[in-house]
Image (cartoon, rainbow, N blue to C red; front, side, top):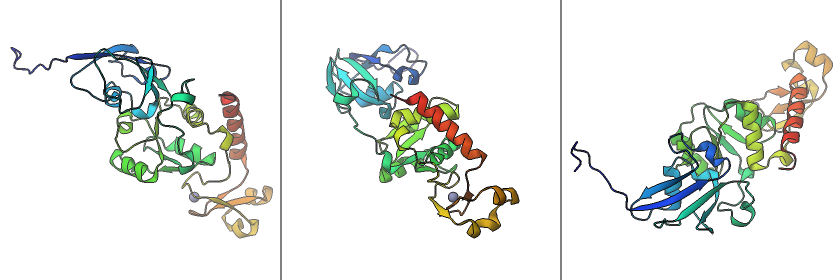
Length: 259
Ligand SMILES: [Zn+2]
């Protein structure tokens, strides 16, 4: 027993970790620099060690131990040298642990990222969002629906039930959408005017006369093509918001072309 009455646990083993690329941005400030020693007893899995250092498993796609690719269940040995790579590195094509993300199943967006959810829907992607979603709700929902979790909580992404997710670093919405498009290679699958921004419902073309009573006089005068949400019945048309959306899509496509 320590003289101050604190039980000291001595760690018998040591492994050296290097976090590559964007993984360094996620590390808590207490764990930087990107290369450092991890002390342990017994044989923890490499996944548990990585998460203990602050990086959710969802952000890691390739792990090399002493130069050899392993999966998350690998059990650490004394004196191991570990390199962890994010998704999209040159090693992912041969050594990806997780494979392709199920983008077709859609996203679950945490309660702090409502604007990101609306942007994803605007671009045609299925994005579940509710500002009442707690971490206790999101984890089982993501597991049962096999959806991708987008969150600013590294803690949430460490949940054992979450297989797919992405940690959103930036507080800026445009950077967030660019980051998500890049991470999940979305730029080839944009489908504007497919989903309702407000409720995620699907939009259907609708005759003007059917929705005329919901329109402002100027909208009724200048526009002839309309779409209606099949869930909340909101009506959409290619007004100024549509022009802004096209500009944003162009910008995002240009930024992420060739990635
Ligand atoms: Zn709707």
